[in-house]
Length: 184
Image: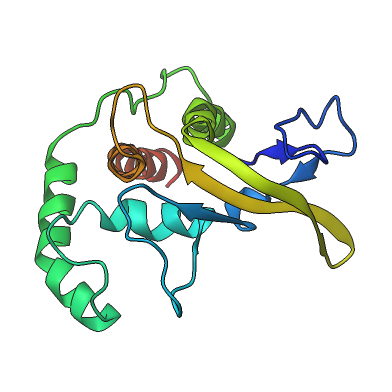
C-alpha cells in the first residue's frame, strides 16, 4: 500500500495532485513503535517497509527475543514455524475463496484491491512527521518518520500488524494452492 504526500507532508491523492511524492512502499520512511526501547547510538531506525516484511511476521513467534543473532533466532523459531504452517494447512481461513465464476486472470487485481483497506489502516495508525522530498536518481520521492499513534482499540501496532500478517499469509497459502490446481 503506497502512500502519497504533498510538499507539506500531508497525504494527497496523486490523481488530483500531480506533484504528489510517493513513499516507495514505505522504504523511505523510518518507523518508531511505542513498545520499543528508545533508540541508542549504533542502532539504526527500522524502515516502515522492512517492519512489515520482517517484524510483523516474526512477531508470530512470541517469546523469542528479536535481538538474538539471526542464526540463533532462526533456530529457535523453526519448531514454531512448523507448528504454524501445520495449523494454517489444517484450518481453512475465512474469506479466502473467490466466487467460482471469477477468472483466474482477475485474481491478482481482486487480491490487490482487497488489501487496500488494510494498507489504509496501516497508515492511519501512524503519524507521519518530517516528511520532505528526497531526490532518488532521476525522481523525487517522500521521506520522513512514521510514529505509532495510540489506537482507538488500544491494540499496539506490532500486535495488530502481526495479526494482519498471519491472516494474510494464511489466505495466501490457500489461494496459491487453489490457483495452482486451476492452472496446472
